[in-house]
Length: 76
Image (tube, rainbow, N blue to C red; front, side, top):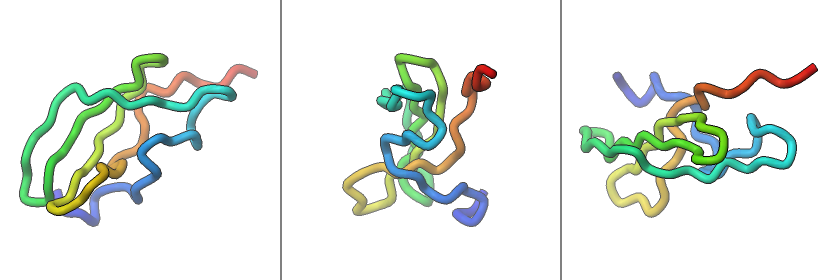
C-alpha cells in the first residue's frame, strides 16, 4: 500500500459522517509501525464505528487515513 492508496485525511474528530448530535471520540485499539509512520486502528466507543489513522514521522497528531467503516445507515 502506498500513501496514494489512503483516503484524504479528515480531521481527527470527524463529524462529517456522524449522526446528528454525535461527534466521534476515537479510542486506539492497536498500533503498528510501518515505513509511512505509525498506523493506529481506532474505534468510537459510543457507536462502535472504526477508522485507521496515520501518525507520520515527526507528526504531532494522527490523521484519518481511511474512511469510517461500520457506520449505521441513516434513518428515513
